[in-house]
Amino acid sequence: MNKNKILLVDDELNLRETISELLNYENYDVRTACNGQDALDLLEYWVPDLIICDIMMPVMDGSKFHEIIKEIHSLNSIPFIFLTAKKENNLMRKCLLDGVDDFISKPFKVKELISIVQSKIERFEKIKNNHNNLYLGKKKTFLHEINTPLNGILGSIELLMKNEENLDRKEVLSFYESIKISGERLNRTMQNIILYQNLKNNSIKFNDHSSCEILNTFLNTKEKIFKIYEGQEKRISFEIDKATIKFNKKHLEFIFFELIDNALKFSSDNKIIIVSGEQFNNEYYELVIRDFGIGLSQQELKKIGASQQFNREKREQQGLGLGLFLSKIIIKKSAGVFTIISKENEGTTIKIFLPLYKITDLD
Image 1 (cartoon, rainbow, N blue to C red):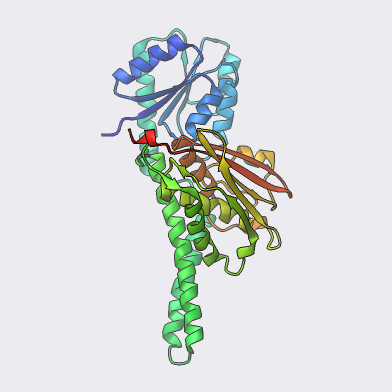
Image 2 (cartoon, helix red, strand yellow):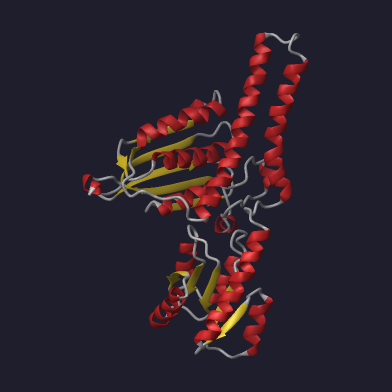
């Protein structure tokens, strides 16, 4: 049976260790962070069932951390409890109005802590059971991403069946190609949803001994991309040094596909995409994907998350907005580093540092 997961955020080491031990004894899976920023880094690839957080902390305090959590659709329903030594009614009232679920005052009684934790997790379990699905933004967006390719498949098949005798071979092949493209789009949408759920549930194992050759992986993925962007081969300029990296090949293919597809999709047809890769140092390989498209604002960069899209109508996006988010999670879970710099109407540069594979990794 899977343990309920709790994130504990507090800058006091002794208190952190004490509460963690108490909750571990109660059979909870507890992870800790010393401030809000560390907690956000952890939440990028691990989703708890409850957050317990101090208010006064360095780097990023509890109030700012909670404010950011509220803006992330995949996290804002998680019960949030503040640990506080402050007694001011105004502070508690403000936090409650901002959506905090409860308070635990320091010093606290063990029974009080366990009772509050149990009640909040039980409530969250009911919410999850009633709404056990990925947050997919506006329902019309999700339905559009399912219905559009499905209608393309069914509509093409219906036309083929009705006009079988009147269509020449070229027209038939055209319908087959339309069915294939729609099927691949639908499959990609569903596979991304499944991948998200598996990552969220921590059910995907990341093997420390995985390896792949990065140039060959890129070339294989590039072929798949240009089956969709037919006739646009010249839009990608690449210079990638060969290297064996400590990374699952399927995961790297997914990342290449999603990030390059995004770069092509959000750039005009006369703009090229630059992909470069070289050994950064003895530990890491640096991969850079750069486009000169519409870019993202600083505010949009802060909100990148599961199913997060920006100005969909204006940008005519396809997909649910999961690709960038999932790539970021996979890279972090594989001991890599992901950075993104973007500016509206100028483009986006994504830098990824991937661990190099060494002979000693076999041990």
